[in-house]
Image (cartoon, rainbow, N blue to C red; front, side):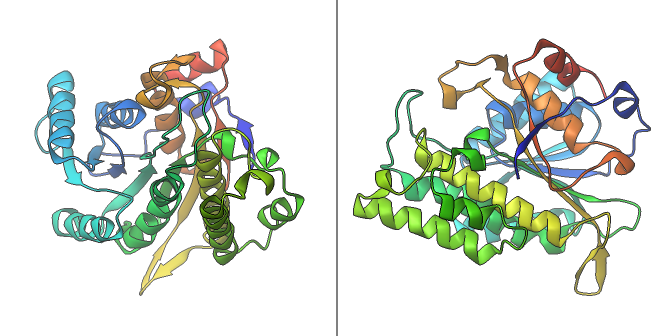
Length: 316
């Protein structure tokens, strides 16, 4: 899955609105940055949005801030506790969502992510935590929420994984691993073996000579794995050719990745070429594309281009 520039046409952006206030979206890591901006944008457009955060007080404060800014009623934006690096927290979140909303999830945006590097640094001291949060977290969350996606022949389940071009295959310097990851027959188990191999080599101190990406290595590997997993899911549940079953229910799914580019967030220490609001505006567009324009298995990239940023700021 390699990045593509995406320029939504005016016709696509102005297409008939398919969602209602009953449409439910979950955005992880929603208490700040792109996640916060995306929750606010989706709520502004009339969806019911669940903001998740691993800190209860920060999550609740973020919800109250969005409600105050948009003048929304209390039932429009919700908070549920979730630490994507903790499998138990993921299961608890899925149970809490089911109890509150039932099997009504329409959109999942896996936005939560971490990096412990300075912009010009490349430490792997927190590699295992980075893998747990950026790869295993989204993977386990998708698996936990699969039974809770809405069952409808008229709508398509949408998963948008916020990723990075640092996880592009061309960042890999190992021909052997690149060949595995670019295979059309790639399997989940192969992705996990590559992640485990990286963690082993970090522990052994041999990772520098094994062909891994050279910049923000642990973060890049985690996003490389997330992109690969998204590719596998998209192929498995290709909405253009087949649906998937959970029990007796039949559902349609679209899975895409989105690189927001060099965005001004806490991860970049406030540096960047554009704001979190601009990145979130494009993420909202990608998330809310009408069914007949909705792709799957794509990796969209926000380029440092003023025309593109203008499109990202356009209303749907």
